[in-house]
Length: 514
Image (cartoon, rainbow, N blue to C red; front, side):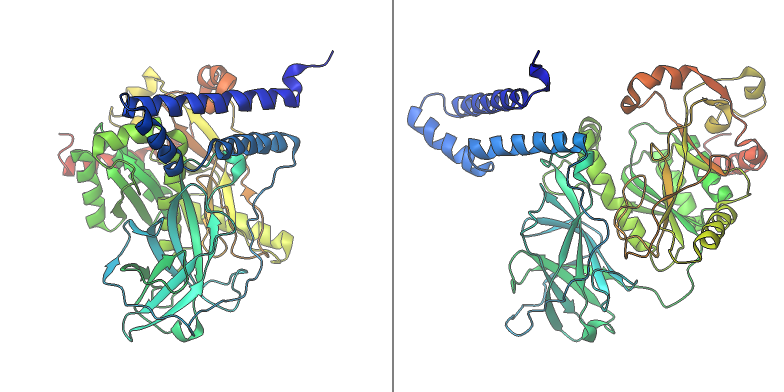
């Protein structure tokens, strides 16, 4: 018998229902806005459609296209955007452009050029496949909805010392793959790459703005973050996306920071939305020690930025939250492309523990040396992913009697017996030589073609402990087993004495405990 639910008829019926629902909502909106005037209802209804993206056929096309993409994805036929760029010609418009110098310059904060929201710009001199003969300025932006592939972007580059400028066509790369979620009614993160003309390579004070139209002056431009004086890269920087806590948990933050420093972080960069008083006190302490950099950040566009409302907005809009997180993560990457060998994206409920070595540096050296010996150094590492295991709230009375009450991670002695699959919930050490953009869990766009895919460290080499209050909704039916089938966890025991000593010292110094 022909199965209705496995047919294309289902797609058509569902699409029609969605279109009818949209029509009903439009009519309800018109009625609420102008209940007493039929003429105004019609006029305002037409304006509403015009101002919100076009006609009903546009809406139907969007629904059908999204559903078709999901259908193709299931069959393995969906388009996946390339993560390695082919070489492009540098297109400069110097012969016919006359620009005004910018009147305002912004550094690491949101501002708008046309319909783009710009966050930061970084001078990138690493080898790249996109413009192989040029340095590049990498600009992190967000746009409402995806930028059509047919759209062009123009980079207005200014030398503020010599008051000269250049207009160059740039390249847009969306920091997202449609397979993760094909909908685009969100603020979307993008990396815009602008090639630097040769005669600008010695400039020391550059700013840049963007335009959808060639030769259009913009009043506001972004300060370009310039590379430091040449020196050998070393060390590992830990990047933390926007902290947003209404509950004050200073003890947890101190324990987490000290564990990062013990295992090998030599710099921790924390982006902050809202941090309560005592947690802010903790961050300020480590800033003075030179081990932490805290960077306040807001949401772009029309997103809310009042602390409580923003917190609720972030919590309730999971898919938008995932896209917003990619701006601080990628900004952190670009802050360290000239200073650190690796960056590691972590939340403050995650700890990467080396199991065969004392610290991350020794562990990574072992992994990369083994890889290069096998591959005769024909490819460079992009990222090294560490497998995840969950730790849900638990207690073991014997151990807890000797561990102070403020040591949350050490007191939690149970971990899930099941190890997450490679690529699921893992976090990766990102090689700053080879990566153009990062996703939460791995490297996304590569700088060039001669690089390796993500390496997965063996679970006896390192593990990522993930402290969660409850099972993630994505784990679905597996949650019952993840939460209740557990084993004793001794992973952090060899660090326990040193960690407890350091945490106690800091908490006493800050008068958080007496």
